Length: 173
Image 1 (tube, rainbow, N blue to C red):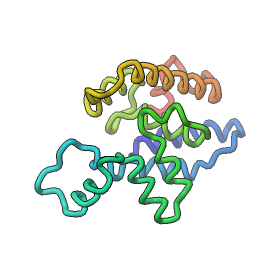
Image 2 (image 1 turned 180 degrees about the vertical axis):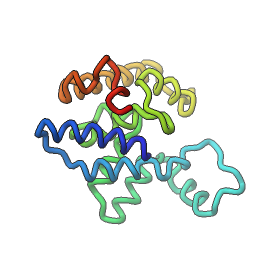
Image 3 (image 1 turned 135 degrees about the horizontal axis):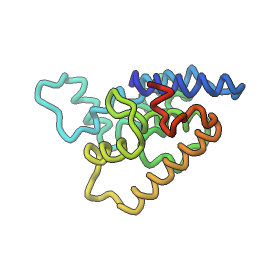
């Protein structure tokens, strides 16, 4: 979550330099919270996991960590944060509307654990952890293309120098 927030900060800084208005505070806060209950999606939990984790997993496992965390935040009156976090899963790329949603989504797709990676690497690693036999292969491929289109959109907005030498990691390095 810290690395996703770091990537968001870099993008927000560049947008601010270009005088593009953005709610950076909410994007950073959402990045720091977006995977707090990620464990609800794990296939199994160990018997040693705290009772609270078990309870939350039972409650949110069917809807997933994105919607679960959004629900928790909405109950606390944090609607903006909830809306950002609700859309950071893989398939919601088709429904991203605001620049804030796009930044959080994209930053999340460029981070694998604690490292900044290219989209191809992230897709491969994501499939290892999250793929299901029920996934529609054509929809997954189309969604990956849509994420690549989002990357191009952000590259145009941020300017070519942000993606210097064809590699976003150089700027964030």
